[in-house]
Structures are given as structure tokens and as C-alpha cells.
Length: 452
Ligand code: BES
Ligand code: MN
Ligand code: ZN
Image (cartoon, rainbow, N blue to C red; front, side):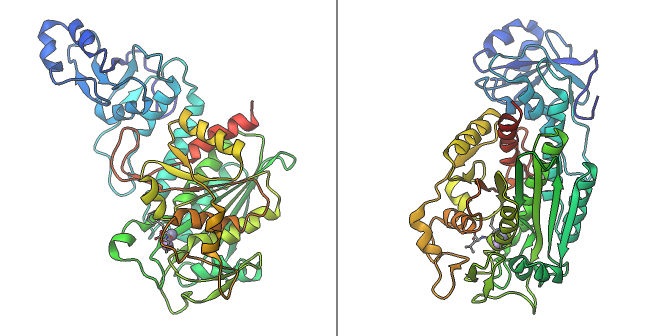
């Protein structure tokens, strides 16, 4: 067995109690124990410990009984030790319950030890333990990458993590770094990253049978986004270690694809840079000639993600992928539109959009499709260049950023996720800090597309 789950036969029992069931269950308690449950309403994550193990060891609230992620509160809500669930409600998917429990057991412990061990779950019948473990491990890889500060997770650190991932799965690795980016024609990746202490680079990994359908994953790997010469104010810069959240999601998803040995030819591309200030920094007004030859006038050096992605997407489409997916903490505007819990995604492919939406719902990875609105194309047109990197119109910023990316994907079947990569607050199964978003839904979609 693995570290997320237990196989103990002597595990204590936790009973899942919906708000509707609350009164019936409390009535079953011995009279002496009923006062313990006085404040228990069955709200999601509410816990009552029953020290005498009368009808069970603990009551655990699940609200309306439909949200498996409520169980994310169990790992640190219940005392240490092994637990089993004695009555899985029909409305809850046991695999998702197990996943939520495992995801809730995460702490970022690189710089501060956890105060206690998580309570461990004996996975309920219907849990594919290998699969759920794989998903939880990938999410924790993503979280660790995002939570790691930029002083250890700069372009160097991200390259090391990327190499480790590739080696674990026998993938072929290519790193194009520093001046080699200019020689190999990745001008925008170079321009964004050249002022930083650690050289910019493009990380690539290839894996799988070349005759299988080609899947390309691209992740924004801005290890720190100061804004560049258009420097961010302090509050806006504070959490910008997470600006490689797209890369962390692409890598977590790649780990899932490779661990499951999905029948695809995988190509992962991460432009890893730091958007820094220096004598060598790119400037507002500079005009970059991109890998594809599209000319881009820099309106704002803080719109750097679309630049590094433009060249990475260009490289990806050269190999004619059957499906191209990118993840990026691309805009603040995405958060204005949907807030921190729902991730916008963009694609022109109706069938794919429907598959992704359905997959997101199935695995509790909340997503919302947004439009690649042709009318806003004019907002990124340049006066003296093909396009500008930031629209003059201060509206629809997530859409205009997506339209910028679309200029670089040619006719490929393409999906773009404008993610947050972060939980602002602790929620059950979703601890504060770095988070995998969109990648779990995509993995679910890929399994359905390529396996069944
Ligand atoms: N990395 C940021 C976007 C971001 C900010 C994501 C906060 C998540 C939380 C990106 O590089 C950026 O700075 N975007 C600008 C674009 C603008 C200059 C056109 C933004 O959103 O303000
Ligand atoms: Mn920026
Ligand atoms: Zn950024």
C-alpha cells in the first residue's frame, strides 16, 4: 500500500451524515453521547468524535450529500490513525471521495514540518487505488512546484524538476538555453527572460510511441513575474512565484499520461523564464519578431506570458499535434471574470469543449468555457506591427490574451486554460496555496478519448 491510504483491518469507522440524515443518526447515539452532537448539523466537513466508538468513531458532515470533496476535510479533521467509511452514500463516487481525502492530506513541508500526520483512509469499495494514488501524486507534484519559492524554483530549478520527470518515465529531453534560444529561433522566450540571473530556456520532453496520436502540452513557466520594466506594484508581485503554475499543471498532467501509459505520443513544452528588471530587459515599444515571423509590438512588459507561449506554441504546431493544450496563469482578468475557483478555458472545437466541460464536472475540477470572440481581434492589431502584446481596451483581457495565443496555433485543434494555479483559502481537499486546475479534467477527457 502507498502513503495516502491504509489497508488496516482495525481502522476506526467514520459515518458520513448529510444534513437530512442528521436527526436520525443523532437519535441512534447512546443518550450519554448525544450532547456531543448538539452543535452538529451535518454541514460539509463538520466532525463529531465519539470516543467510546458507540455506533462509530466519528460523525462526518457531508451537507447535501452530493459533494465528494467534503471528504477533503477528513485528513486533518479526524485524529491521526486509520479510518474507514461505513456507509458510502449512493450519490458519492467512492474514487472521488478517496481522492478528496488524499488531496486534503497535503502540506508543503519543504521549509516547515507538518504538525501532525494526516488521518489515513482505508479506500472504500469502488476505488481504483492505483489510479487515485497516481492522480493525487500528480496534484502534489504540481502543488510542490507552485509553492516552491522562486529562489529555488527559478528557471534552473524548474529545469531540474522537468528533467527528473522526464527521466522517471524514460522520456527524451531537450533543453534550449540562453543564446541557443536565438540560434534556434525562439526570440520571444529569449527577450522575456534575458534580463534574469538564470538564463531563459525552453524545456521539451517527448515520450511514447511515435505512431500514436500526437498530444502536445504547453505550460507557462514564468518562475517569477516582476512585470519587467512595467513593474508590478508590491501587492500584485507578492504571489508571482506561482506564475509557472501553467508549467506545473502541464507537468502534473504529463506525469499522469505517462504513468497511465496512455496511447499518445506526448510532447511537453515549457518556456522557463524569469520576467526580471535589468539593463538587458526588453522594453515597451520594442518590436519582437517571433518564431513564426509574426511581429509583436510590446505595449506592456507585464504581458509576458503570451510572448513566451507564442514561441512555444509555434514550436509545438511544427510537429502537427492531433491535440494541443496549454495551461497558463495568463491574466488577472480571468479572475475578474470568474473569481479564484472556476477556471476559464478556450477552444474553437465544439465537441472538445463539451468533453472538457463534462469531464470537469465528473471529477470536480470546475471549468467554464469562454468565447474566442472574433470581434475583439481588432483590439490586438498593431499599427506598426502585426499584433500588440496588450490590448488598449481595458476590457475582456482574458479573451484578448487567448486571441493572441490563437495567432500562433495555426489550424491545430487547440485548448487554452487561463488558470489561477492557487487556492486563496483552505477549502476541503483544496489547501491554501498552489493547486492543480484544469489538468485533472483534461486527464479524464484524455482517458475517455484515447482509452475507451
Ligand atoms: N502573470 C500575470 C497574470 C496574473 C496575475 C495571473 C495575477 C494570476 C494572478 C500576467 O503575466 C500579467 O501580468 N498579466 C497582465 C496583462 C496586462 C499587462 C495586459 C494582467 O493581467 O494584468
Ligand atoms: Mn505579467
Ligand atoms: Zn505572468
